[in-house]
Each structure stands twice: as C-alpha cells, then as structure tokens.
Image 1 (cartoon, rainbow, N blue to C red):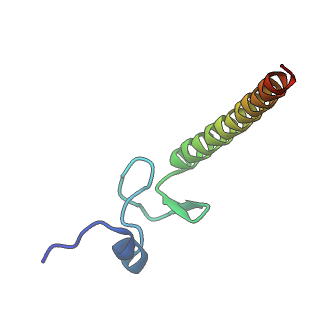
Image 2 (spheres, rainbow, N blue to C red):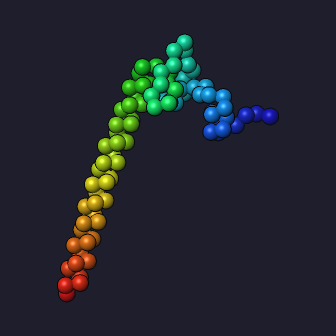
Image 3 (cartoon, rainbow, N blue to C red):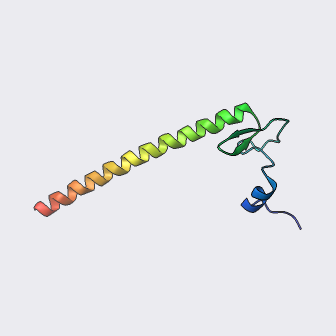
Length: 81
C-alpha cells in the first residue's frame, strides 16, 4: 500500500523535502519556525514570504476598519434622516 502525503505521515516520518523548493535535504537542514528548509536561500525566501503575508494582513486589517468606520457613519446619517 502506497503512503499518502498527509499531515499524519509528515508528523510521523518527518519532512522529506524542502517546504519552499521541494528539493532534497543535504547534510545540513535549516529551520525557520519548525519548517525544514534545504538551504540558506530557501530560508531567505521563506522569511520574505512571511513578511509579505504580514504586510498583507496589516493592509487587510486597516481596510476592514476603514470600511467598518464608513458603514457606521453611513448608518448614523440614515438614522438622522
């Protein structure tokens, strides 16, 4: 029976390939936030993706608050009429 690539197998067997480039591990594994990576280059790519995600979440949060404030003001104007 062929093993499936699911989270249970990854937890039991450990990471077999790099999370960024899917490359094989050499003699040294690099880790960032418990994510196994094959090289320093992949560590840098992982951190830049993480930073981009963080910036996106900040923009999303600001936009959501702006829309919520606009809706609150709109409802206040409707109630005044």
